[in-house]
Image 1 (cartoon, each protein chain N blue to C red):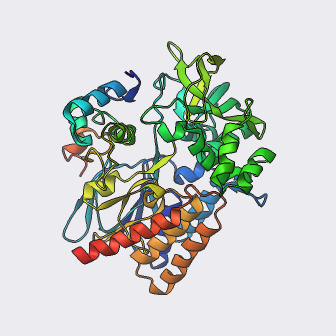
Image 2: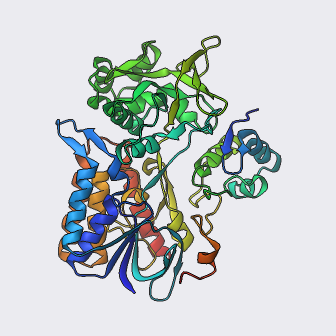
Image 3: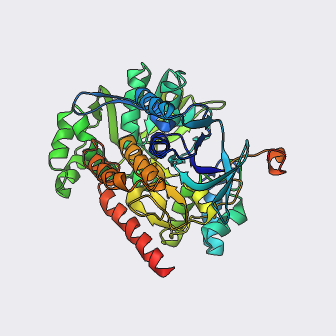
Length: 88
Length: 396
C-alpha cells in the first residue's frame, strides 16, 4: 500500500486513510476523527478534497452536498489573546 | 456597524465595494494578504487577440475607482469565524469583531493538492504559489523545475514563469493514485488540453482542437502522442509521461519520470531521473467556502463549478438574509467573470434596481466571451445552482 502523505499537517498517509475507510466503512468526518487528517494547522484546506477522493475510491460513493469533514471555527490560525476576547 | 463587510479584496470583492459605494453604503473590505488584488495580482498573459492581460494594472484600475469613492480597504486581516445575529453578522477577525448588516464572501478559490511521493519536500510548491512568488513578490522560485499536472491553469502559469526567465524542463502528469486519478489520465487531460489549444502555437494541438468534439480523434491524439511531447512556447508538454516520485533528502534534487500508457499505467523500465531544484504541482482550483460553511449556508456539490458551492441565485444572494457570494467561491471561472459578478453582487446589496439587470447581462456576456473556459459545462453548473436556490426557498 501507499506511504504517500495526504494530510501534511498531521502526516497521515494514503495507506492510513484507505485502511481506516475499509476497516470502519466510514464517512469523511469519521476518517478525520480516527486519523486526524484535516485537523492540523491548515484546517483541512489542503487535504479535504484529497480525503474525499480517497473515500470515493474506497466506497464508490461521490461526495454529498454537505462540505466533507465539517468545517469548524476558527478557520484560520488565531492567537489565544484574540480567542479570549482581548481584541474586541 | 457597517452596511456591508466584504471578505476578499480580489476582483469580485473590489468591484462589489465600488458598486456599493456608488450608493454611498458604509463599506469595509478586508483581505488576509498584505496587498489588495487577490489572485488577480499574479496574472499576466496574452489574450488570443494579442492584447496582454496584466493583473497588476487591472488591480490598480479597481483600486483607483475604489479610492475615488472613498472605499475603506484593510489588508492583513483574516476572518476566522462568523456568527449570524438578529440584525446581520458578527465577523471575528485578528483585529477584533466587525458588525455588519450585509456580508459578501468573495474568498475565491484554493488549490487542490497533488499528493505524489515526495511532495512534502522543500522546493515543491503549488503552481499558484510559484505564480505569486514570481509575479507578486518577484522572487525566483528556482533554477530549473518541472510542472506536475497539465491543465488550463498550469499551462497559463508555466508560460508566466517562462516569461520571467525561469527554466522549466517540461510539464507532465502526476502518477496515478486515488487522489490524482483524473489528472493522471491522459484521455481526461487531452480533453482539457483541446480547450486551451487555441492559445498554443502548435499545429498538433490545433489539429486536436479542430476535432475537439469527436472522441475518436482525441483517442488517436492520445494514442499517437509524440514521445518528445508537444511543444507549447518551446516547452514540452507530456501527457504520456508521469512523475512517479520527487527525490531529495533535505530538498528537491530530482524527479523520476516514466512513460505511461494511454490509460495512465506505468510502462515498466521507462524510468528516467531528471535533475531539478523545484517542482510545481497543479491540481486545479476549488471554491474556498469555509466561512460560508461556518455560518450555516446550504451547499451543493457541482463538479462543473469545481466543488462545493454555497447555494445562491442569479443576483448572488444566498438563502441567508444579507449574505451574498461572488467570484470563484461561486464556481471556478476567470477574473473577468469574478469582476462582473462582484459588480452584480454590489448592486444587489445596494438594492440598485436600475443597474442589477444590466449587471446580470454583463456577467453572462463576460462568460460567453471568455478566452479560457475552466470547465466546458459551466453554464449548466450555474443553472443547477440557481435551481437549487429556488428549491431551497420553496422548501423553507
